[in-house]
Length: 450
Image (cartoon, rainbow, N blue to C red; front, side, top):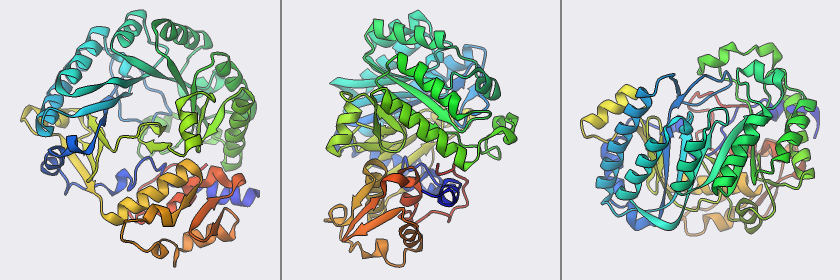
């Protein structure tokens, strides 16, 4: 792939497509009433996933793009969790109290900022409000720097079977550039403690495109991380959006790699992980061959949601907490972001839905096409549109963006089958954007495609 194409598509700012449409298309026209009406039918749609957002950290990482609040005190966290328990009651009541739960994911922020007893109480509330399947999976995002033994015990006692640890980079120069100092030994202790307690699956998050990051530092980070043998890796490109995230203004933009350097870093990380025995899954995940994520990729049952690539096959996701996004068969719902407004709505006994989006049949078709492209690097338009009532011609005819990708050798089309060329797979988000009816129409800034 030429440097010109890498620059052309790698510098393009496109969504990550963890949903379609993306959150930029959400509207305040969809609110608590629409959410409550759709929750009333959710149990009939099969088992659901639950996402709980814990928007607190002990310190700010300069690269962070998440909705989080910095607190050194425990009281704000405890108060927030009390409000979240009330939200669980509201959602459970609206849904009829008999919703089957298959997966639970705690994200943030730093969910492990909770005290052990607080985490146990929150899990107890969930189990009393919903009907957990016998083998329901529970995943938690963890900061290894602040993880303590009592919290590890509480995670294990409450059925946590997967932990996602933020690593980003082991290079001390890069760590200083993003204000996140984390030694290999801290990470090693966290992994050992979790595995000793019976947490069976460990995931590491790595980031490329960080300030002062080099190809060599990426290689060294991967080699150290692979020594700990996590079952999965998620490898993300740093999204520099200082206009939206003030903490990112602390990063020296002159120290950030360009599109070509970002691509080189991404590819060398992939090469090193594959040398270490990991299989490349989709755009940016890696897994050991016997991991369920690798099995889903082989079977073409891989899915994509707000946590990235996943084996979660639920069609519904209940989002709990400030800024949390839920997905129901009818569409998406997002809670208020400001903690005060989120708590205020719940105090009035109202679901804290700020905005959302109700899906049309065309949206659902485009979502299926984009998900298969992101997961499989190809999509059979005829198969995906079967039963939708749409002739797939409208997806490709007069599609200038798709035509340009074809002319540049990024994709090929044979009949109704679209395939992303192997050497251009890192540009798959740009390909997905060709099927996004809202792309460039809402003026939202996204991360770079590579």
